Amino acid sequence: MNTRMMMKTVVAALMATGVMHAQADTALLNEARVQAKQLAQQLQHTLKRSMQADGPVAAISVCNTEAPQIAAGLSEGDWQVGRTALKIRNPANTANDWEVSVMQSFSEQLSAGADPKTLEASKQEGGRFYYMKAITTGPVCLACHGENIAPPLAEKLDQLYPQDQARGFRQGQLRGAFTLIKTLK
Image (cartoon, rainbow, N blue to C red; front, side):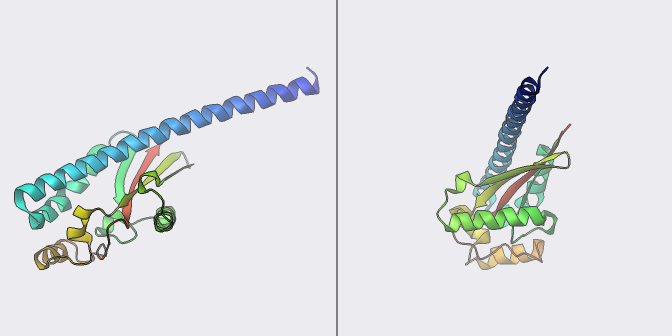
């Protein structure tokens, strides 16, 4: 085989490998999006149901106990599913360095007018796939995360989360992010 033919073969092999990686990345990204959507839907459903049935103070207790259970239930198999924030409520959700930098970028993009639905990030490193999806502060979030939290709610939050930092948000601001890790085989 001459040098020119060998180069064409190498280039073709590299291109095929790149396509395979792109397809794998797309499949992982789509899988991560489904996992994040399931977490969001289950959390919203649980919180809404509790608020309607028992009111916002009781919903704080439900969120405190059921949110970690929902994340754990979705963290079966190769996925680890959770939430994090720059201003955390639960210390178990503390962000790592990459998550902090991604959320800072999300916040800057939101301030510049980006559509919050488009804010996501991913990377592959050390045999793992990492994914984050922005969570913005919606109207319902303001009851427990806003600037003016009613005294009974603030008391319950103080009781359950003595180190709570997740207050003072305005609608549309970055509240945090869904964060997912998949161990690759």
